[in-house]
Length: 66
Picture 1: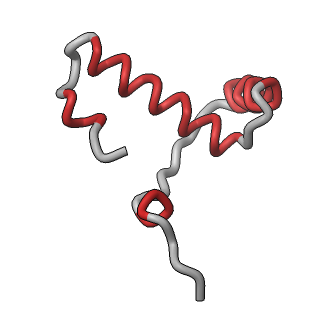
Picture 2 (picture 1 turned 90 degrees about the vertical axis):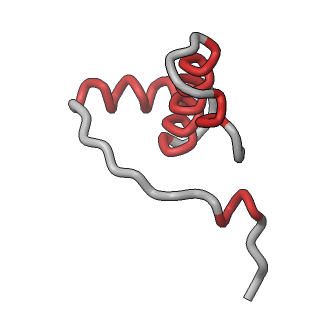
Picture 3 (picture 1 turned 120 degrees about the horizontal axis):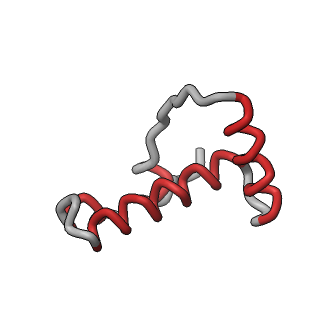
């Protein structure tokens, strides 16, 4: 059995329900950036959380541990 890095162990699964047209847009964006849809969602969430922290909408501690 191989050892997992800290990054791999800290990942969690989330589920979201979105409209079909939004999914198609996400797929197109992921394709342009050569990412999977899962990776694209993770990048978009990370950007949103970091932007919210920079704007003071959430605590900077919410972006730590990455």
